[in-house]
Image 1 (cartoon, rainbow, N blue to C red):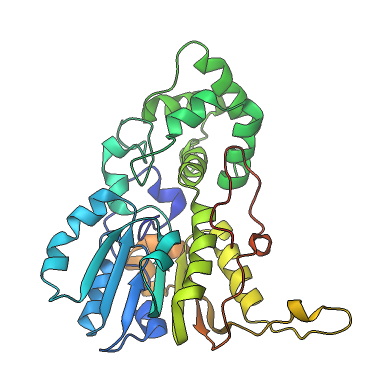
Image 2: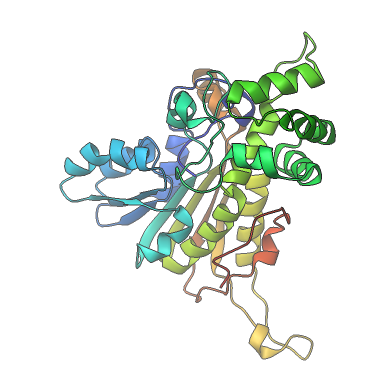
Length: 338
């Protein structure tokens, strides 16, 4: 993932100028100070990083997209040693940071990625059916052309909340037998032709399928879950975790994690002593959304939601993925469970 994907429904098919979402609220929750070390786990176009640097804090900024890292090198060079860029998935942030005073995550695809037709994230312009943030691994074309219809339907239905998931999956199976899907507009046009589009429809019929493919190809939900566990391991007592999400699947993962970590339980005859636990976070803000003025100036902020928590002195817990309720999807394992 990379910073600032904005409104999922509008951004998948369109070009969006990068404006950091909920920037004031993020800085208030993060409260960076001059001596702090802050991890920006989703560097993207550097919106949050620039604001954190302006506060006097140092930043370790992570992004798995080599283009984002390359674009940030000038900022790194001008930072006076207060910015270090790391090309890696943010789920591995604890491999690059020993301890931190804050971790901020802005989940999803960036406007830069959407604007580059050759990356294949958007069907606004024709490009290869790719969608890989790290520019490596399985592509969207690989998924569309090789997965069973039932698996495609599960991906479209769960990750895209697409009500025509089964119909679209069967259409793809029949169409790819004649020739494989290779371009974004090929897939988008095929879906529109098959499903149709009423004049009142505000979004393109392929929007939710593209969203689902992007989330699946990049294992975005698994990455988010692993990043939350990694943040728990690196944050100092009193350190702040701040996460901005843009749709319910992401927000549910963050909400479940904070609720679980803010709850303490004592050992008893019903609960073995080994299962006794202390709260590792305390809630510091839940469900903060953008105000009318920000939404008017930046429509991407409409679906943004911020949640924050403060690290306690309790040791980090083991990485139990069951708390996240992640779906079982084809071809996805869950590395990083500790």
